[in-house]
Image (cartoon, rainbow, N blue to C red; front, side):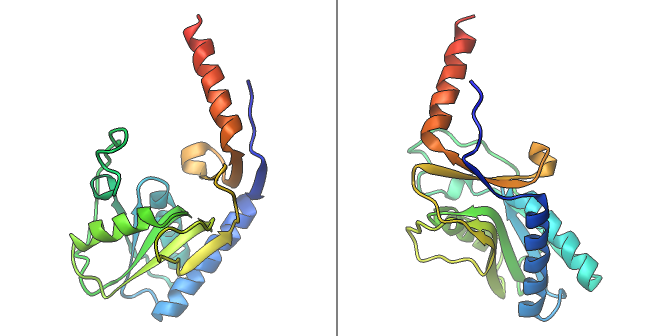
Length: 196
């Protein structure tokens, strides 16, 4: 059973324009790239942070340091759900007195960002922590907001917003998926695979 997204809200060109804009906004707010470090939240926040670092280098001539942060052990549902897949955290800088920009793909309830803040504080005391996301889909459960947003995408709880990246998925796009249709298609594929 083939299933497709309900809508594609950003294509490759739109994503590239949004990332270039976010890079300019980061530089403007921080008065240049000198004290900026980018930290991507595993998993899709990491390639987005790398793209932003390249954009900043193209604009300013300075490439900010990039780190990756695994928040698995900091999640407020750790131990209550399925065991998380662990990834390596790599913060190749001290984390003190820098303007750190946390980077993630989708901002939803705010719980991932809260966990990332807890994890980040174990690595130092940054001057500021800012948040850049490709998509803000609303439905916040915590008082957290993004400083830099690629696109606001209002969505329902029955929908999934997926950021697709060329290095991971083979193409760049922001897609909206129907959660019920996706679940039914996965169940059908699983039962078909088990019926062989």
